[in-house]
Image 1 (tube, rainbow, N blue to C red):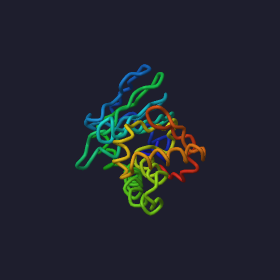
Image 2 (cartoon, rainbow, N blue to C red; image 1 turned 90 degrees about the horizontal axis):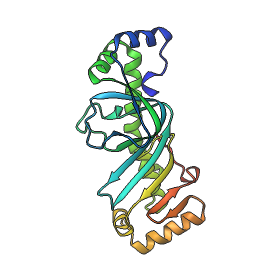
Image 3 (cartoon, rainbow, N blue to C red; image 1 turned 60 degrees about the vertical axis):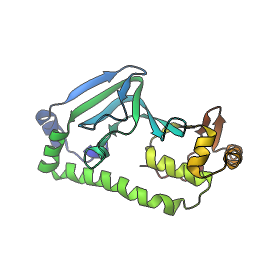
Image 4 (cartoon, one colour; image 1 turned 135 degrees about the vertical axis):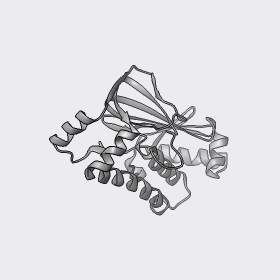
Length: 215
């Protein structure tokens, strides 16, 4: 996990001894977090698969869904600053186990050991710098560039089963497209093998052709 890279066995032992850790299990389909939940703890997925829903506007505008498996840290970039809610809904796919400890305890770790501080600075710096590269790497206003920017902004490096669900008129307005041009662009991306159109939007099936560099 990015916040714990490079720790020695001794540092891991010290962390476990000094930190009050909670372990929580979730069943298939159970809600782990809601978008308006405040980020007051460091939550680490230690096993299992999670699904995430990002709602842009209302549910008719755009819902981006993704799945992730393996170690993951939830909401670490929202611990500080003006916006300290998760901003997305997260639920369990199958059995999921989380390790949790408080923000105050994490602050103590940042103060007492430089490796935690460096890891966290690298983590938030990468995410901040990524935002500036989105329009440099994907300068066009076509559908392919818009999908790339949205995935790079909201999804993670290990994301799978990425889907876009929307009302065509609302999504076209969001992109400053006409409904007809959106339909034509989606047909082209489907023929190119990048997306599969669905009754409610599309599923991304080829991240490589999107040239995505996600965090």
